[in-house]
Image (tube, rainbow, N blue to C red; front, side, top):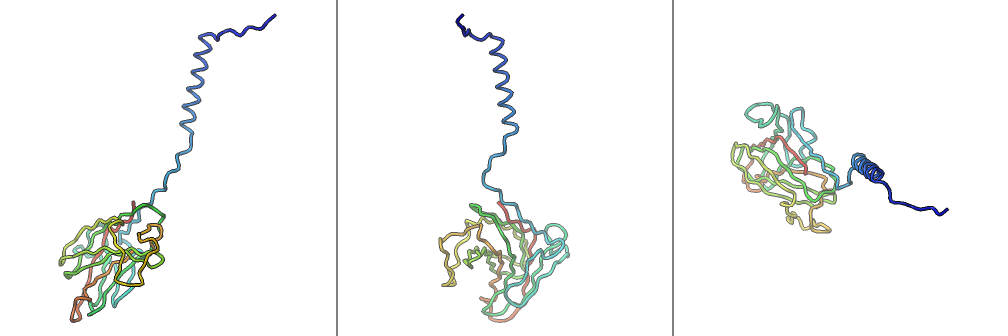
Length: 203
């Protein structure tokens, strides 16, 4: 007798469709997350408990944590840098960092200077290629600074400062530096200081 394949019954069709829907939903629920670009975590230096790795790298001076309310903007402490403004020189504090490669990075912080001055914020790659942004600060007023790394320009003041590709690579940044240039424009020695608080570095 010949075997005849008939059309499936309506009940069987509904049952099969139900099974397929259940399997599809299960796969969606338990599928591994997509592997996009890793998100750069935000580095946050509050200075509530210490200098958080920030230190003087150039010029006669020191850093310490102050808890004096008139010099703290956020939280319980701020980083106080005290130094001697010396003609034809500058003062700088820095923090070593290690970042993953990203299209760009954002810096935000509060800063206050006890003297009218020009500060430079620098991001330096591990091959010593430096990129900077210049700030003008009034006397004794907190200033909120928010910068994207794409705003930083290659520092050409040093002829040896050359980058192999002419752009700032976030994954190669090794240092954040803040420089007071007051001494370059001064004819006599003076006392200088600035305060740094709530520094964030992230996407």
